[in-house]
Every structure is written in structure tokens, then in C-alpha cells.
Image (cartoon, rainbow, N blue to C red; front, side, top):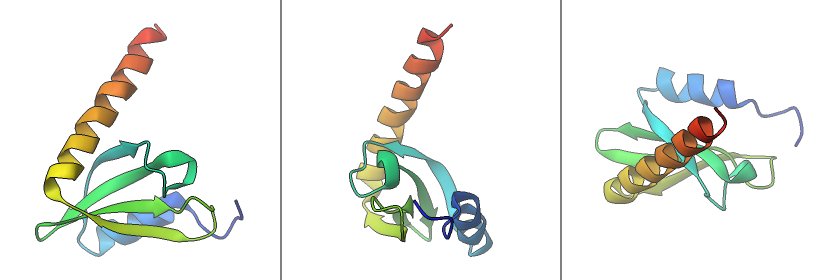
Amino acid sequence: MGNSINIDEIDKKMQDNGWKFLGPILHFDKAWKNQASVYEKNGIYIVSGIDSSGENELNIKISKKEAEKRIENSLKEIKKHMLGAL
């Protein structure tokens, strides 16, 4: 991945534009290392981050139901790995 895209800058830009961060999303094939973030604004949900090539910004619309399901599953997996490491 080149140095041209910074995930912190993407997050700042999203929040500055009124998007609310809802949570992480894992196993998203179109995202860099299969990891991205879910944001919501005015009832619209998107997956945002860096695309799988590592060269471009990723912004893909997703349904509310899918966003909630993917966030819940991702948080469960993260908790499992964190607690398993203890």
C-alpha cells in the first residue's frame, strides 16, 4: 500500500462531513486486509476505508440490516480474540 491514503484522515473526513462511526466490519472482501468501518448519516449506511488494492478510498452503500449484522458479528469476533489472548 502506498503512503497516499491514511485511514485516520478518512475517518476525520467522514466525521467532519456529518457521518457517525458505528463500528468495525471484518471479512469485507472489497476492503484493505478485509477490514473497514461502518458509518451512518441520515439513514444511509456505508462501509468506508481503504479498498482491497490499498490504493483508493472505499465508500460502499450497505443496508441498515446488513450493517448492524456485520458490526455485531465483527465485535463478537474481536472480543473472542481479545479474551482468548488473556
